[in-house]
Length: 528
Image 1: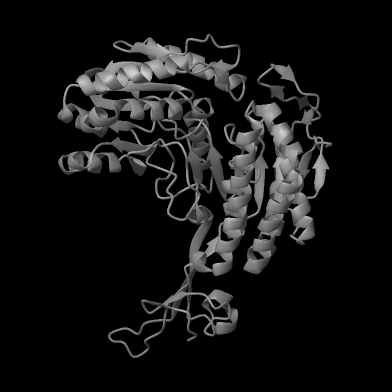
Image 2 (image 1 turned 90 degrees about the horizontal axis):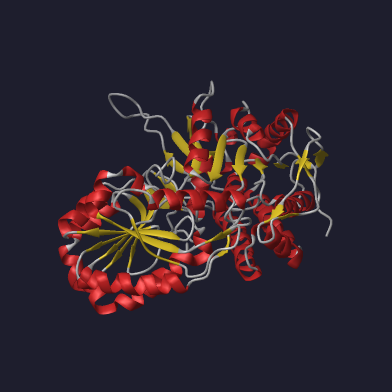
């Protein structure tokens, strides 16, 4: 299948600066043949001007039309067949089976948002009727609903080339909200990005979306990202990646004359608290679960369990021995790209060089170039409390086990944690009663609390919270997964004493959309 290597600006194309770059197969370290054109500042401006021009029309579309657009994107992605999966595998080293599942997640969440916006609950229509006779002051008629923010900049992530990339969760949520999207493709998988972009553009044509509702730009540096975030027409940013990258975008957005929100997911060690009762009963089973979780996808999940905390004793010793044996038998696998592989080697080496950190086990197989070697290290609770470096994420198949002297030190270690996406507790029914304060302390630090499971695996549903306190994300109030992800790209607008004909349909007296609305404190589908 021919791949479009030019920048997509609405339905047009640009060779940008004229400079090109190529994707690299991380398994072979060889360049792939296509040369992708680096976008220019003029391209960034053109994409956002077109997005702004399409904004009013797109935001005002009937929800069903936007839903059909999302469904058509899903259909067009599926129509790419094995070509999409094979290209993604070439650019990321990920197996076809994993990518097939990720494509299903991507198309599934597009359809999920389509169903959700048809229901109308996302606008949170709220009406308080007037009370002109109220004393000492009359009450006005007030009606409020959510409205789309405006053009959204989405940065494709490296570890999910489909589900968190061109048509991934950020793009799906923004389009569902009524926001045009400009995507900055991840330079590690430009071919995959191009194929998905063509699917979106074809869907836009087939469903008669306004031109400019979607654009895709390429850049293997930082200039285009900066140009997009600082552009006056940009209204919000979605990002999944490193702490340094997310913080840089956050700072750029905050320094604008009109600051805009940056919804950045930036990293998490996803701490796991191991209580002795559970280890006494199932140390080997738990070790097997965590050996698999630590190495799943070469540890390149945002929910990888990079930190384990337990209490010294025979139970923890048994767990350590079992985990060490299992990790030693795991094979190194190809990481997503050279940058991630190099960062893993550097950060794991830096962690092992910290005082009081000792290597517990690593894969018995020496890794090839570009592969991540599974490993687990240990440190004391005292060292963890004293050394902030032990709190840092090592992105890849690495986990640090903290051995605490007693339950009180374990609680203290938990209280020193930074913000996280997830926190897990492994225990027994009898241990929970004595651990309520520990559960409460962990809950304050994370977006999702897991009991007797593993953090890897994120269910895409309305009840999922995928976010957490800083530095896991820039705003713990929001999720990047599930239908509530739409809230990131909406803002509330109130209408006071507005003539019915000038109100949005969701707030009109007759309730022509037949949606559930909160009227004078009670939810109803009735007209006024």
